[in-house]
Length: 516
Ligand SMILES: Cc1ncc(COP(=O)(O)O)c(C=O)c1O
Image 1 (cartoon, rainbow, N blue to C red):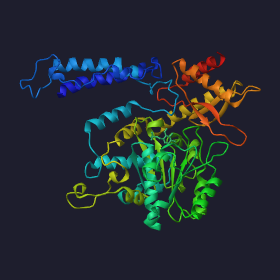
Image 2: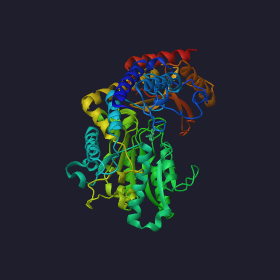
Image 3: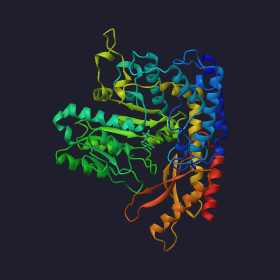
Image 4: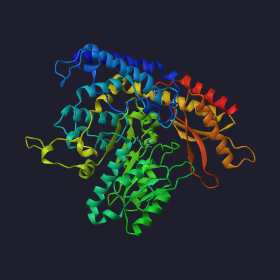
């Protein structure tokens, strides 16, 4: 592709994306595609001829065709037609203002432009040497974000820079951060008590923790399969679906008495299912009181979705006691205007994290023989890494912290407004949530069994989603005391382009579906 061809297609692509963002609200939020429908429209084999063979004059050498303006235009017209006719209809529109399902996957103009810049530069920032700006910009924006969330200095590079004990890095996903935390904890504990204990290490999370904890345990050799909980313990939760710290204490003490060593505790700030917030202070206290802290037990905090609210002073309580944790992750791609993927992870103990992940073959060492100031490949599972800091830098500079705070406050207000409507209507029952998530179900009718309430709520969700303008998902809350398990509808107003009027739209659809 010539530079001029790239320019022309690039301008057209930006126009296509801008139009998609303007028109996305018109599509049914959830894809209506049947299994195989997209596959059936795609040829079995790749095109033999590209732009040079697409109708324009062929290059002089058949073996090395060069593209031509005419050929390029034909091919790119066809590509964009397929985008409109095959790809877009096969999408669930995560950018639609009516996307209220799961957790949002935010984007913004500045972040998209940052992605483009990163793709254009296409550096591999695996080590400082391979692109100093990629490493140093990431260090700086991670410190900026730590400042924005009011994290303790121990999580920053700060004045000590390359020589700091803590700091942050961008992971691909929160799941990777969970695995990295487990490996860091394992490294620290084994360093203190000896590697013989490797098969007697245990990990802990609440029953409501994200499935990435179990997956990390499987990858790290703590569990043979998803059914194997012999070294990864899931602690029961309280009435608010938050981890019961007293039960954590019992489990850790029982394990220690049986000769196991606690390696890692995962606390969640904003569970995926219902938005519950595990009590960080009491959990950290259990780790201290049981003596586990002395043997190096790692406390990782997963604030994948809710962490963003801590940019606002009034929501800082969500991360109260974070100074007692060893690491924290939150996804800027869920709730901070930054395109997927951008998981921000901080630790106070770089040394243990790096010890778990650093491999330094000759071919990756500095040719000069000098030590590298900081290699982000030692903070993650893969070797190569994208220039992910660029888009976050663009976002922070474009919006500024006051713009970001205003954005978060609007999303919180929208979630509050919807919950207030649910709360005020006796047909519905609020069933938890947090600043960025609400859960509700139909109120039980006199004489109705729990199963019947669940089934009525399930069919309400089907009618709501049948409208096409919004998309909500569900969860099942765990039983507690005499309260049985409950099927509930989750709703999270977080799509970048959703506005307060979309709360009214969602309410109108829910209201009508409940009256049907
Ligand atoms: C609390 C929590 N942790 C972890 C994850 C996993 O996130 P990722 O897709 O970044 O791995 C999610 C995803 O929704 C989540 O809600």
